[in-house]
Image 1 (cartoon, rainbow, N blue to C red):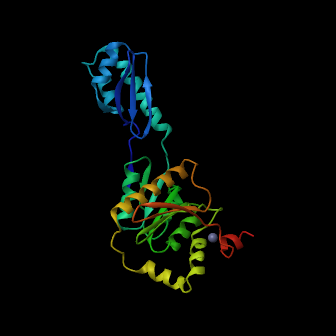
Image 2: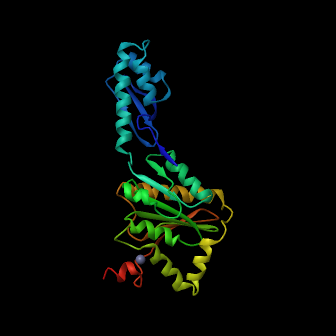
Image 3: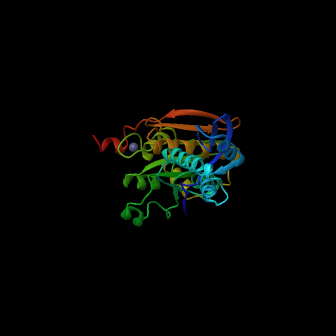
Length: 273
Ligand SMILES: [Zn+2]
């Protein structure tokens, strides 16, 4: 699945602000003020109501649009698109896994900015690696245990991974697994093995087990939102510190932070020494 969002279509709404200015609300962006308008231009813009930059350009080009309104319409469309493109994250995000969580994440990225790639299973497809068109971040959704094999395969290609692990009434988001620094997926698993003898065999069996029924929709929505925000901030260069992840829990939607440093026995530490 590949979805490109047209960058020239920015939803907006103009509201009266002063005698020669309008306040412009932009979806998902900070509002702006367009001033220096003639009264007729202000009236025309306000009369448009909720619209989009593409509709503004169409209105500017329409033969029945007053000449004086063409320029402010174009200015407004250009300003809205400029603001939107400044916040654009021109990277590709892949979502692996199945169930409601993976579907919710795919939808969030498809209706947001950027591109969603659903790579062939399991792991990175050779074509993606060879073409250099692979995702900047892969979100690996799994149940009960981190999808270790898939996460490590992506890490080996230099790709950042955000693990999302559903465990009944809790969902762990992150930590962001960055190649070359911070913990890897095996580090996370080694911490679990330390707490639960026999964990390694269980983890392998769990990954091959049939898919569980979807979890609580409210928890899925909360965790998917946290995952999308974490991923977008990572793409924008302001992601969470190394090893810091979130856990969202029922019944009240509590969100807590946890920190997982690199595990001293993991090969990502011992091989780098
Ligand atoms: Zn490691």
